[in-house]
Image 1 (cartoon, one colour):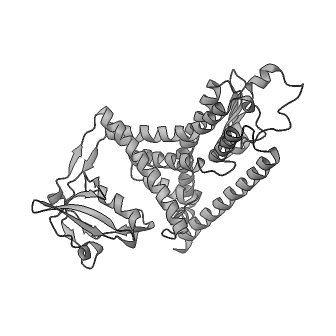
Image 2 (cartoon, rainbow, N blue to C red):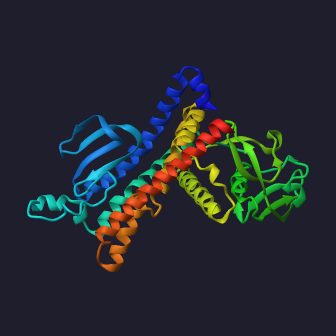
Image 3 (cartoon, rainbow, N blue to C red):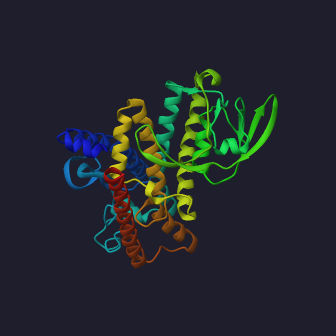
Length: 383
């Protein structure tokens, strides 16, 4: 209960939690908006504002292109306002889009006057920038720090576990899971955690022979090293250092890049699996976190060292990039849906329809924020 403890300590700890959260979020948001900004400028779009945060401006400056770069009071996001946007959500300014008061130069710099491919590229650039940041962080970690790996050998099978019921034995070497190669014991919980209730096929080496073992991980509530409760799939096996040949693996540049791409893909895959699980009833919505939960997580990782904070930044960057691709009006994905419609039917979505859609999207986002924050409060004060 970080927030309770922080308040009891006079608020100094709470201030540190907030500042650490702002630092990490600002990095992720800045890279996201920088992606929008750079691709917009490359396509000749004039930018009126580049904002970190919302609400009243705290400080800022104008660049040579008269774009206002600013930091605002509410540090929960950011935006780039293009010429032709009605607001920070990049809703088109339908009323001001045409008219004799606009010069040809102004029309050329307006976002809405660009080709569909250019508009789509500008919108997609934000999430893509988040993915690039994550790949760079993961790859840099592998290249400069390396990774500790261990042989996927079983040292112990827990009594009355899914693994014991399926027939796993001490000394088994796990080679594949559902056909995917296992190179380290840490690969096993990563594959098993989201697969509770789903049968998996393990290829195991036992006494020199490969055998296949079907097993269904059981849903288990566990606490991570920070005390956060999580519902995950569990086999019931463990490995000891003396059996597993724990060692540090060094990565070359290309190998590190490939590993960075895979880690980013893994975070995306795991997130989509969770979302799918919510709709199929396999996952619980109480695992969704809002600003309070994320701030606590950032603070926990901060206590583990700078490298862990950087890795968490990569994970948050992927999550924010992916969230923005959801087809919800007001998010980047919603804009891309509108452009897809325009490309298919040869005309933009009706202005009134877009206006209503943006308002609905805004309500959905606010509702999700309230729901996630409520989850945070329940976990913080009542669990």
